[in-house]
Length: 243
Image (cartoon, rainbow, N blue to C red; front, side, top):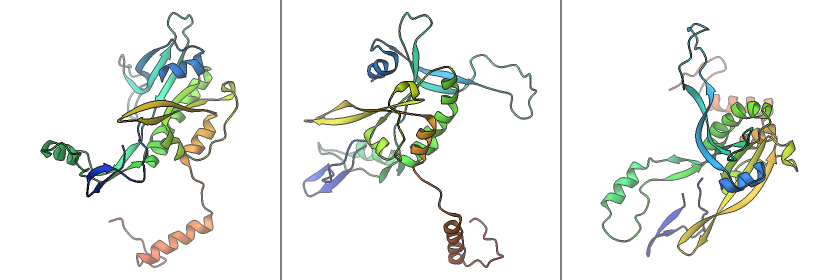
């Protein structure tokens, strides 16, 4: 994603010089596995289905039925026992109008100029971080930690800039999560993916950074409740139903 603007010269990149937002196996191998010679295996099932409420506790498990996957697993070829590390890749979601409007506008565009985006969108880091990536780490990292494995997480610079400050550790041996940050460099008309920073954190620090917020005091929260109830015209004993 990148922000564009409509000018008298046509559509061009926003004059505020926006960054590209998006989402190298070899680098992760170097840091975690000690070698760049790795093979990437995609979408490996990590969790198995358990009996649902109302099912018999001893219900027969169906072969290959996974309910959770790891995005990629990097494995060093011909190692026994196998040397590997899990990789989670997180792009940013967007909020706003659906892409169908743009696909329709592109199909109808008849000249060589860049069509202006038909919808309004913005990167939604709150959905991508606390609502998506955080549960993935909370589910997977405790088991991986028991197995003696580190979770590699790949994000871009803008993603990590929208996280809260995380307490880092100096050495990977004390970390649960290794954050690999990529950035995008403009080179003429082309864009190149470049290496960014690597951060080592414990799981708890990762969760704190993804939440990127702290609770208000009870007094402040209650004042907000009272303010909202007064705006809705509710008395102290009235219940305002959802609309």
